[in-house]
Image (cartoon, rainbow, N blue to C red; front, side, top):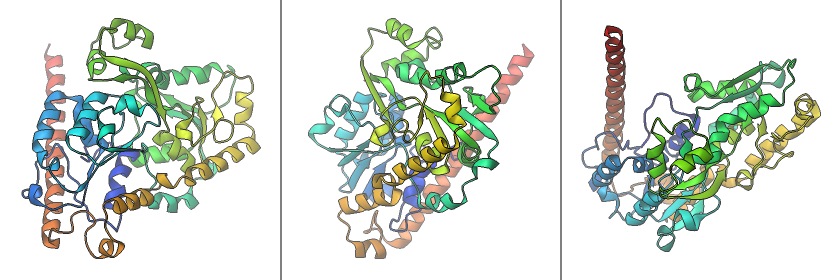
Length: 407
């Protein structure tokens, strides 16, 4: 489920492109919300990948039911079935049941720990492996040589996020509060050029985000994750209420204490960590384990109460050392490379290298002409769906504005 082509983050886009741009694969990207191309159910696949945006259907009971009904053919498919969820702790029991019911062979969870709490059913039938929120594409490796120089960057410290609802607990709250933590350490007469925002209107996506991050010397970072496991989406639904939306984590938990959830911290490396390392932007980060890849004072400057924080930002030897080691740390993990990840799936699917070169690594039994038709049809259906939806959203917004003016 690629999702809307407008406003995608680099991380979401990379999770699609790592498959579509790999020459070893012949891929049909299907949007779960768009109409299915005729004949897709009868095609013979070697590999079916359930993307994070596809699995996000679990957040809505109606959408989940329609998605499972629409793609029911996946359950009986003999292809290697792979799930790549994100935010596994959000509606975790629903996700656990879904991948179990569909006999998914491999699930790549972004959570390094607590698998027995997140996937109690699936652990009995499928295989769990550690995955990541983002993978490094080959073109990104090629762009490393042209990264913007330090002296040409105009922003000293940057940050962007939107306020998360309280169902993600203290870790979700931290994503907004990190700006306050950092600015509290600054002297009133500091001369740093800051570009910090926690307002959704200031969101930056796609290539613009890459440009913004590359133009920053330092970036604030907190770990991805949640302090809570929302088993059935009860907390998610409760967080939509105006009465609790702006509560702090402890206040929210007191208000919803009877709802089904577990207090359990799940953190992991984020797309921002990876992108900052690749672009040579030094991270000023909340101390955490970051999936065991990044370590404080070696790969990032810890955002801890410290009188010497600002002096460390001005220490050229310090940030040169950190940005170099951070890049080395990211590049030293083969599992973060898209090519390595795809290679692992090809081996799991049992496709011989000779067949990978000559035929499709996703559905070799389907004639080439049929594959081309399905791919073009799927692309058309996706574009048509999202174009209509975008137009509808704009018309609804205009209508709402006119009604408010008329009042």
